Image 1 (cartoon, rainbow, N blue to C red):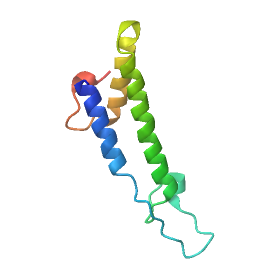
Image 2 (image 1 turned 90 degrees about the horizontal axis):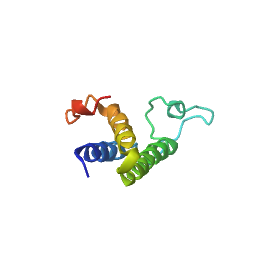
Image 3 (image 1 turned 180 degrees about the vertical axis):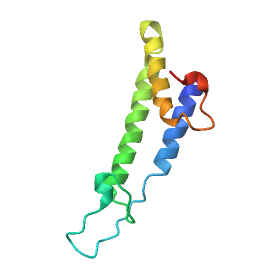
Length: 102
């Protein structure tokens, strides 16, 4: 693996480790709405939010594996650019290589 893919997989592992805990704090009233369902922050850790974070991590790993499988031939430059675009999410991370910026 390259430094770029190592960087990506490490960031994904951090994201997965930071997924909300799988517990749910019940609301006092049945009709109370959890802001996490709309992408906001809340005191509870909604299970749907955790599932979404875990699904995002799995999808990103699958995409990386697919791109790596085709890193030879005509698709290699395009696939490397795709990996660099993914890495751009974490461009403010201290381990980000400025050479990965597009």
